Image 1 (cartoon, rainbow, N blue to C red):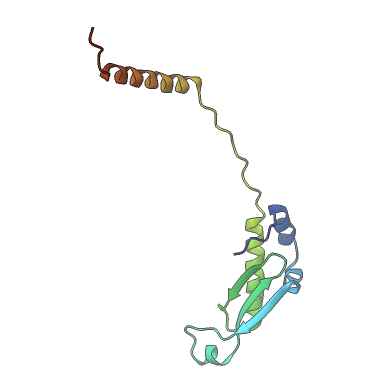
Image 2 (image 1 turned 45 degrees about the horizontal axis):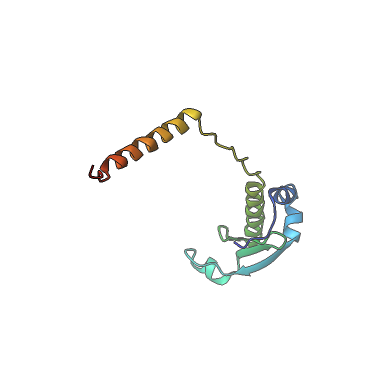
Length: 125
C-alpha cells in the first residue's frame, strides 16, 4: 500500500460516505476468477477489482458468482478499511523514571566503579 498522506480524519470522512458515493469514486476492473467453480468461473468475468481513487485502497472480490454481488462486496471492503483507518492514533504517554530507580542505577554504577578501582595496580610505596 502506498502512502497517500491522509490522516485518520480523512478516512473518517470517507467512512461516513454512502456505498453509492464510494462506488462512484472507484475504478473498476472485471476479470475471470481463478480457482474452483468449473464452467461458471471459466466463462464469466465475475471477479471484481476496485480501486478507490482518493485513498488508493485496492480490493478484490471473487466470492460470489455474480459480478454485481462482487462489486457490492468490494465497496463493503473499502468502507471497512476506511473505518479501521479512521480510528485516531492512541496518544503517547510519557514515561517517568521514579527517583528510587535513578538512585538504584547510580548506586550500581558507583559500586562497579569501586570494583574497578580495586583492580588497579597499587603504586610501589
